[in-house]
Image (cartoon, rainbow, N blue to C red; front, side, top):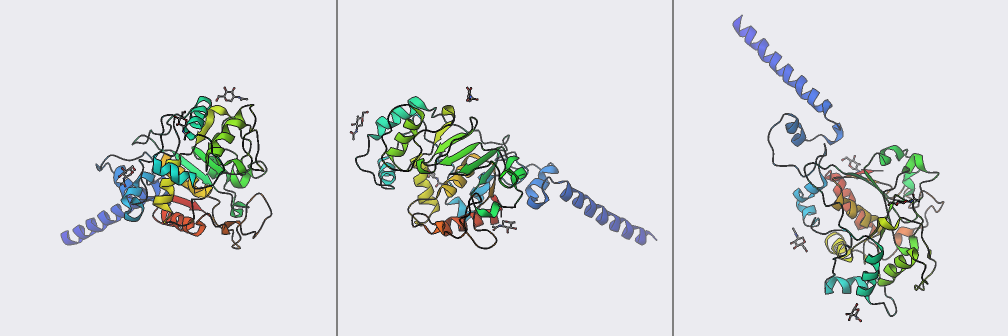
Amino acid sequence: MAMLRRGRVGTLMIAFSVIMFTMLLFSYPDPQRFSFKHAFRLLDVSLPPDLCACPGPCVAELQDDPLLSKRFNISFYPLMTKDNTLSKDTFNWWQGLQWSHNPANFSQVMEELFRLFPGESLYLDAGADRCRSCAVVGNSGNLKGSYYGKIIDSNDLVMRMNRAPTRGFEEDVGARTTHHLMYPESAVNLDNDTNLVLIPYKTRDLQWLISAFTTGTIKHTYQPVMSRIKANREKVQIFSPTFMKYAYDNWMDKHGRYPSTGFFSLLFALHICDEVSVFGYGADEHGNWHHYFENNVGNGFRKTGVHGGEHEYNMMVRLNATNKIRMFS
Ligand SMILES: *[C@@H]1O[C@H](CO)[C@@H](O)[C@H](O)[C@H]1NC(C)=O
Ligand SMILES: *[C@@H]1O[C@H](CO)[C@@H](O)[C@H](O)[C@H]1NC(C)=O
Ligand SMILES: *[C@@H]1O[C@H](CO)[C@@H](O)[C@H](O)[C@H]1NC(C)=O
Ligand SMILES: *[C@@H]1O[C@H](CO)[C@@H](O)[C@H](O)[C@H]1NC(C)=O
């Protein structure tokens, strides 16, 4: 009789534990990203201080992955600041990206640049209290019919690139844009509350930025490019050549000559966000590479020689497979 009762108590205990564990699993904010670390935190087991306040893994946990930790170096800041100086090495690498005839004096252009634009250090508030979620939205045709608009807009920051329109595509790509990454040839007008993030490939690109916001004569010679741009001058940010070189050296394994705008955008997010979701990269379900906003199916723009498109995509898949980013395809 006593034996029987003890057996029953044991069974009850096991049943109770299973129920508690299941409840814990389902009470977890996002069951797809369940991790024991966070389950233990719910149980109030003490753990080392957190890198971020997000329920799922923090991007900074990249450092835990032996392959990715060799690449990811949080000490590189993505943007140029007023007190930013380039090493000789970086400057030479950067100047070699796109040849230009008779380039202007770089330090003079920099001075002019930061008379016009803020050039302050932003986003350096990472820590246990911050959970900054970011959506990086590529231009792939695989966004068509995806209905990702709401998920994209629910992020704290929404980054888009190059020509990326939203009007008429809101259901699939969302309506908000906090950061729009572009270079002069891919420039578009922006809303007043969108940050214009310029990726400069040469001194002339910085001169273009200055002239696009002032009434002076335009000194650049290449076409076609918008000579004036509608955007908020207070919200202009400039990608740092030091960061561009880091992106190439650490992440590209010598594939291509420099990363694509899409990959720069992803790295930008990895360095300033705690949680990164990626949309609109890669081919559509028929294997075609094209833009969601134009009918250019199969024009093969990915086959350009400058970028290592395949390599970049593989990096992304690796980041996704280890839960550092979340890819929506
Ligand atoms: C990150 O970059 C800085 C600056 O270049 C360097 O001093 C440091 O050693 C790097 N850290 C790692 C882990 O590679
Ligand atoms: C660029 O201009 C600075 C002054 O703003 C000057 O000191 C420097 O020598 C110039 N560099 C070249 C290569 O002319
Ligand atoms: C744009 O935003 C700035 C603040 O960044 C504000 O001063 C300005 O009035 C805004 N302009 C428009 C047209 O909303
Ligand atoms: C990203 O990861 C999820 C879950 O780990 C997986 O289901 C999905 O297929 C991955 N996506 C890609 C493009 O690798």
